[in-house]
Length: 226
Image (cartoon, rainbow, N blue to C red):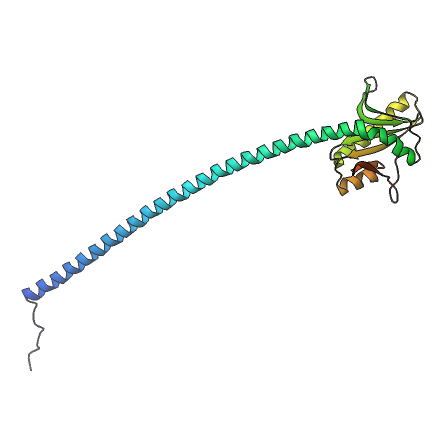
């Protein structure tokens, strides 16, 4: 029988060479890890810088928003003041310019009003009836109660309905049998509010050029008497 041939045993040189290869591989792996750590660190610093920049921009934008809001609030406040002044001037115009012509205009429409006077107040503490009237047109038997607003709203019109009811109640309690009609005068009338006023039986008074127009609640609507 032939003897089995075994592999050559490792020599010192071959083992040493293998160790050198492992050490080189470990060195290269360590270098790669250091490089990865360096890149990660740089990326982390870049992320921090980006976040700082984003925070700075957001802060600047927040300050700009505050300044814009301040300016917007100022403009709104100034606009409200102007509208208020304009509303007051419209009230004065109604009182001193339009009111005398209302008698003539309503006469042309068949009403025999003989006088008009501004701002009257009902203060009936005994019956708890309190209200104010901007303009009253009268001929003794009938009275037209006119509410004046720069831009009437539906709530203004509803309030005028309540005012008419109070006036009617007050008149009944004092034995006055005259009839009351209602009108709403506005510098600016939206279609919705104008229709709502007509629906409630009010005459609508609006500026038109150098004069004004009176719209009668007719057709599907009719003048309301209280």
